[in-house]
Amino acid sequence: MTGHPARPAHQSHAARRAYPARQAHPARRARPAPPALAVVGATGAVGTVMLDLLSTRDDVWGEIRLIASPRSAGRRLRVRGEELEVLALAADAFDGVDVAMFDVPDEVSARWAPVAAERGAVVVDNSGAFRMDPGVPLVVPEVNPKRVAHRPRGIIANPNCTTLSLIVAMGALHRAFGLREMVVSSYQAASGAGQAGIDTLYAQLDKVAGSRALGQRAGDLRAAIGDFGPFPAPLALNVVPFAGSLKDGGWSSEELKVRNESRKILGLPDLKVHATCVRVPVVTTHAVAVHAVFDREVTREGAQRALDSAPGVVLNDDPERAEFPTPADVVGTDPTWVGRVRRSLDDPNAVELFVCGDNLRKGAALNTAQIAELVAAELTTR
Ligand code: 2RA
Image (cartoon, rainbow, N blue to C red):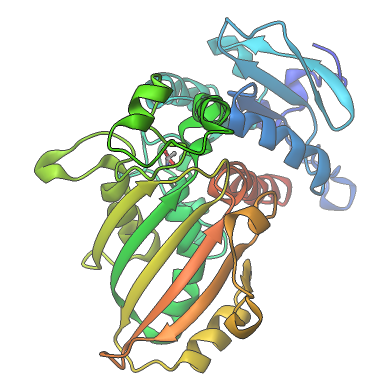
C-alpha cells in the first residue's frame, strides 16, 4: 500500500484500546494520533464519491486504507492527492483500523462488518443489514447525532438514500411542529441502483436518442430498449413505480425503508408513513414530494422559517421566479434542498413540500463521512 505512511498498529486507537498504555502525566500526554480509516467498497459508485469527499473535507484521518472485493484488489485509486492500492477484503485488512466505512451489498456487510468490529474498528455501514437492529444506532448527524455514542455492537448504520433525501428537512419540521404523519412520493434516480443503474440509463438513452416515434405506442419502448438492467421496466422516456424488492402486501423494500427508518431516526415508533417509491430517468439526485401532518397548526411561513434555519437544509422556494429545487440543479451538492412549501388547503396542521438531495452524497457517502467524523472526534478527545 502506498500513500500516507502506514502507521504501525501500536499507534492506532484500536490497538490502544486492546493494549492500554501506561497513563502519561496529563500535562505531557501526547495528542492522540488521527484515527486510521478503512473504506470498504472503495471502487463502487458511492465509494467513488467517498474518495472525493475524503479529498475535499477537513482531513481528520491518519492512514486511509482502501478495501474492495478480491476482484478489484490491486487497482490504484487517488484520495487526498495520493494514489493508494486497493486491498482485498479480509479479516487482517482491518488490523489497526479505528473506523471502517462499509459501502457494499447487504450480505457482504452482514458477514464482514462484525469482523471489522471484532478487530476493534467502529463500523459505519451503508447497507441495509443492520439498520433496524435495536443494537445498532441509525444516525443522521443533523437529526440524532448523540445516538452515535450508543453502539453496543460497534456498528453504526447509515440510512437508505431515499430516507436520507427527506429526513433532514422532516427532522427540522418535527422539532418545530411535532410530526404525526407523512405521505411520501419519491422520484428516485438511476444511480440509486449503483453503477449498473447509471450505465443502464445512459445505454437506454443512447438507444432512444434521435427517435421522434418512440413512446407513442404501448410497448414500443420495451421492444426498442430490450435490456432493462437492474430496473423492472424501461427507464428512458418512462417512470417506473417500483424500487427495491417485493415485500408482503405488495409493498416494495424501498417503501418499507422510508417508513421504518424514519420512525427509528426521529424516535417516533408510531409515526404514520405512507410511501410510494418511483424510479425516474434522472442520473443522480432523489426527489421526494411530502404531505406532512403535525400535532400543531402550521403556516407556510412558519414551515419556511423552520426549514431556512435548519442545519443542512437550503430553502429554495420562490415559485414566482421558477425557484425550486430540481435534481439537475442539486446534483453534486451537499445540502437537502426544499421548495414548493404550501400549507395544505384542507388541513391547517399539514404542509406539502418538495425535497431534493444528491443520493450519492447526503444520501450515502456524505452522511457516512459525517458519522465517521463524529466517531473520529470522539476517539481523538478521549
Ligand atoms: C435506490 N434507495 O434508490 C436505493 C438505493 N439504496 O435504489
